[in-house]
Amino acid sequence: MSNEVSSSPLGALSPLDGRYAASAASYARAFSEEAFFRQRFRVEVEWLRFLAAEPPIEELGPLSRETDIMLGAWVESFGVDDARRIKEIERGINHDVKAVEYFLKEKLASIGFGAQESEFVHFACTSEDINNLAHALMLRDGIDSVWLPSARQLIGDIWALATDHAALAMPSHTHGQPASPTTLGKELAVFAARLERQADAVEGVRLLGKFNGAVGTFGAHAAAYPNIDWLSASQRFVESFGLEWNPLTTQIESHDAVAEMFHALIRYNTVLLDFCRDVWEYISRSYLRQRAVEGEVGSSTMPHKVNPIDFENAEANAGISSSLLGHLASKLMVSRLQRDLSDSSAIRNMGVAVAHSGLAVDAARKGLRKVTPAPEVMESELSRQWEVLAEPVQTVMRRYGLPEPYERLKALTRGHTVTADDVHSFIKDLGLPPDATERLMTLEPATYTGLATDLVRRNAPAR
Image (cartoon, rainbow, N blue to C red; front, side):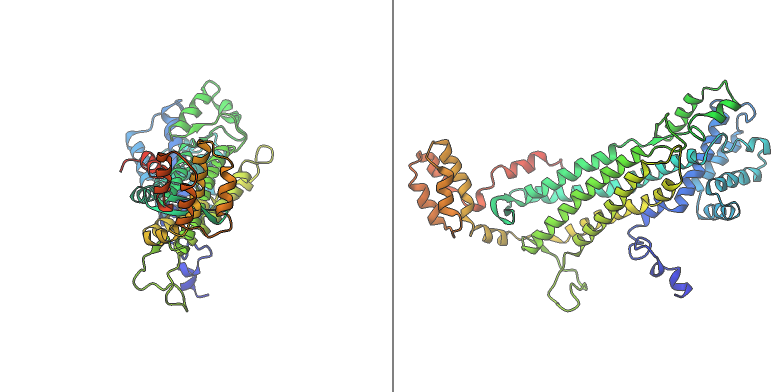
């Protein structure tokens, strides 16, 4: 492979960095190695500022206004050149978190910050004090800023289609066989509500953070400054990032909340996959039409085809995401004794897992923009399904105490081609009260949709 190709998306090992690089760019900004260094640098800076202002540490003293402003500016402007310098330091010492510490000390030295005061960078910290907060911030930013807005936009797209077609009668199928009719809007609303519930669950997860030293005992903290209330200080520091403080940990934060987030994402992915398969089926039955895009090719040999590739793409990426998230959720909650390094290697893949979910969401949205209902197809199919009126007829018979309602409708409809005349003759011979007979006689498969329209309109969000 030429160097030119290997350094381009064509040479990428992962499709996220190759074929889907443009679509995954926002996730790369949230979860890349550069993002990880940026968040770790942020935590190191904020810990130094905290120690100078909060406990306070006399030997560190209050930071000058100029130094404090400079520290904030470094965090805000952190970019690829800073990450490259940290990687240079890491190559010499073979430790990424220590490299961040040395990088900050290097920058502090460049503005004349005292060497003794610089030793309070990374004071009493283990690497996981820095990493767990950085991971939580990466995950929160990636979810809140990138994944969740897209996931909610998809829900809005589905609700919009559902309300537009709340009353559009559609054949339904249970066990693959014709069943009581429904409406397209109601079936779409089912998925919109399910996805909304799972998106709420994702948003509702409160990520945890810890900042308590080598094995979670505050041993070094208490040895150096026994009179400081380190428990309260740790809580204030963690909560300053908008995270929930976890006071009881080993060397690592236990990742239980991260697993909760991943399980919630899995549930969203699963509902999305179910949605894509149903839409795919509606397309295959011609209930939904796909708009042809000028210049696109559906098949390399069959010119007529417009394939539902966006929903297939969404299904594939949702599945990949859930597989990765499932492994991470179960792996990250398990650590040997006070810690082993396997969680560190595994958690680096959380951005990959979330990005595949994001690709699935975006693909489904793209697919939805191309579909429109085909009312005449659904109406034509329903017009041949008079057997589906067996349900309302036998239910009305039950109300008025007629004998063997289920069995009589079974004999009329099961295994037979049933016409409107067959159903109407049966109803007329039942001897029902006139108003009940009239109600049943006016029913058609396309009008037997119950309260489907009301269900959509009462549950849809305001537009």
